[in-house]
Image (cartoon, rainbow, N blue to C red):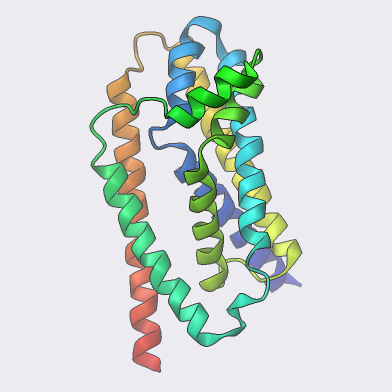
Length: 221
């Protein structure tokens, strides 16, 4: 029982860490909170983040739902472990090389023009919904977690991880919204870019961990 609780705690912490790392990089949600939270206050910024987290959790759940029994094959597991290493390296270098805030994509602008979100929650929700790259990231991350046995291929373990993702993302948006609204003048676009670079560095560290694991497995096989 004690070992099971430890596994669940580790799975939950994996979710919390991934929720933080995915939320920190420069993107439409952080840019929106930075632009609007400074003028409308903490509650408005946090509700934008809450809407974003709701859609993030949905995408994360979809990612886990798509990988129920595919890791029974050793070839598939090895393929996903190698793919996860490549993905972590790509995202890590991408975020590390961030130099400026990105502009809003045409898909996001088109959806907001058609639906006209009038609340902070719906603004955050729709901005993630209109960004298919977020779904791809969570599909890749969920496959990575299961392939490396950080999350067991059971619905309970996946649910624990998803709850950790929600907590991690909410922690980030609460902290970020607080500093944006109450620390006027102390948080600039350059600060957001630097935080994105830190997130990239963390992803590269994760890539090293995955690489070491792959080397270890190859050495023993």
